[in-house]
Length: 429
Image 1 (spheres, one colour):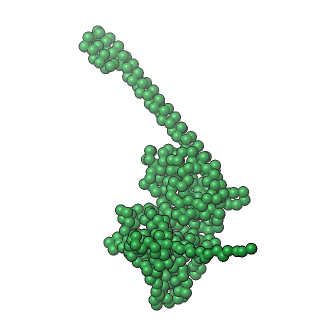
Image 2: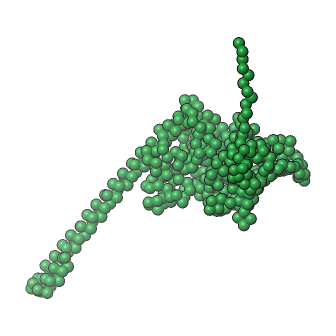
């Protein structure tokens, strides 16, 4: 039997794939903070020796520059070229790390003119440097005459790798420098906006000064989760904390208070999918004000926020009910896999079970509690209004009785004076 030989594959990765993995993947400029923090804390987790570990972010709007620095493990000089040149490939797979697709490093390319990555491993004297000419990169991507360019040739034309000597062998680090940064309305340089974003998404600790339940929650998560960590992250020298507080501003009634914390577990048969907590409010009347930056029970993986505060809205009877609560659900199962944008999970049976379990165990009971408190509040208001009306009627009636008695007493002495009668008639009206 004659067999035909199949032609060799002519697979070609075009240059627009890089555009898809940078500007196409990260259309929100603030996302770059999440991606570089994610890489930084993964690197810190690899450090076994004792030292103060931290992530430092510096915004320099006058020079249009953003810098990320961590003193994690860094990359050994012998591996740096391969690691920094990999796109869509990562050595983090199956190592329990937060980033594993090898694309997070590309996030900043869409928002700057030049990106530089510098790294050094412990006990080495060689610093590895990779530079991206993002200005030229964007020019090529926008030029129709360059449309046939391959991804490999585009990479070679817009990047430069070299190594230099470093004096201190006893330190390790990874540094990202983004120069010529610009974004829509310059959100990336809005210090308050960036601070609030980091407080919400980053794996930072609770503030013991504003949230008295933080220690209890951290102890619970440390004990239950396979891996739970918080990190020292600084923005222009100021340490970042999660936004949770005992006192919260409410849209309707001014302020409410967290009276206690409820801890819970989400299981699938004998497998633990997630652990979480939510705060019980004293009054539970009205949603938490948006300015608080803490509303909604949120999902976290590796203690980094997935999606936003609305991810679990559909698990409640009414979407708005999620914004009545504060809380977190920390994923523990490796079968709940984040998608590339980290705004949801990859579709599988575990995802379906997880959302159904949240609806059944958290969303529906809390929705019922909101409705119950709302009805009770309406009854109290109605009863208060009725009581006030009765009191007012009673006062008016007693006033009239007092006037009648006074009129009767005076008439006995004034012999039914017409002028006095006219005055009393006016008072009775």
